[in-house]
Amino acid sequence: MGLLHQVYVGTGSNQGNSIELLSKAIMLCESNVGYIGRVSSIYRTKAWGKEDQPDFYNQVFEISTPFSPLIVMRKFLDIEKSLGRKRYEKWGPRTIDIDMLFYDNLCLSTNEIQIPHPEIQNRNFVLVPLTEIAGYKIHPNFNITINKILENCKDLLTAKIIR
Image (tube, rainbow, N blue to C red):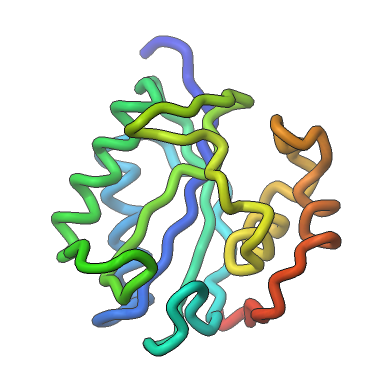
């Protein structure tokens, strides 16, 4: 196996058995993408962006992979599809959402992929679990830690640990 890349991944679900789906997403990522490192607790948060839907369960984990960012993203999309993800509306309900938050310290923006994820700094449901496992990681666009970004986040939705 060649050089391994450190990827931080955010997952979310508010349809079906969300806790089981988060677990299955991690297992499928490990068997298809790479070695799973640190894994956050699971958090429950009111829906963000489109509020008239059930609460979300969210989790963040770290994965080491030999694959390029585009291949990782395509693998995540395949895993989402295998777990019943259907894309009907932006920020709508979903069985599973798998987002690449960071890929090493890469900054990349194409039609297919944006790294780091462009909304990290605006979402407690990402920042709280990310702080749990990687609070001192430096965001490559802002040059400050995830802890500091969380301190400055204006999101009023609370991420409550459930597991």
